[in-house]
Length: 138
Length: 109
Picture 1 (cartoon, chains in turn yellow, purple):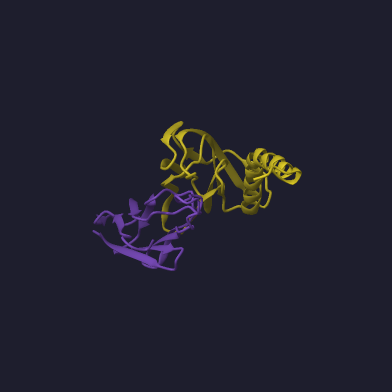
Picture 2: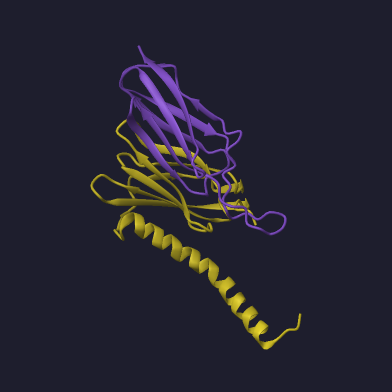
């Protein structure tokens, strides 16, 4: 393949896009958070997120969320290709507004849990999880 | 991937009225994220379970929306109130339209 001026320009452009990708991922998180909260202010009391400090395998990271009285809890992984992880909606027979599951993390990043309370307010908890082996393929 | 999907649910056999019980569910599923590539560099299409619900005698306990970031063989642990003798119904909804169900009876003594 002959290296033309056009190819050089395209390659340069490609590398710029590649370096911007992490920033785009964070913007996506902000958008998704806004879609859930409607841009409301978030408190930090009344929600617990239990996640390991260090996860050896990003393919299956155990997490637990708990927010007494919450209507719904949404979980995000800020550094994943798609930040949304899961939404838990609690019904009238849920004995406690808590749930545990296992998630994939692409790398070391913040895990964010946001709960919607019955009065329309939102509370947020976040924790950094260090990942040794990423869990989103490649 | 709709073959070899097997739900497993653990619910206590009996409880006292109004007791909070812990329910654990696991279903075997590859949860293909849509991010991985095969040997030829082609993206493997997304194929996941996108919703899970648990109901007791028709009343909702929990309704979970799953995204590709949920691990292979989705596992959930949560708590439910048991007001009376009845049945827990568990439903998983696959991307390909399949629905997997399981149910467990519980006796209030």
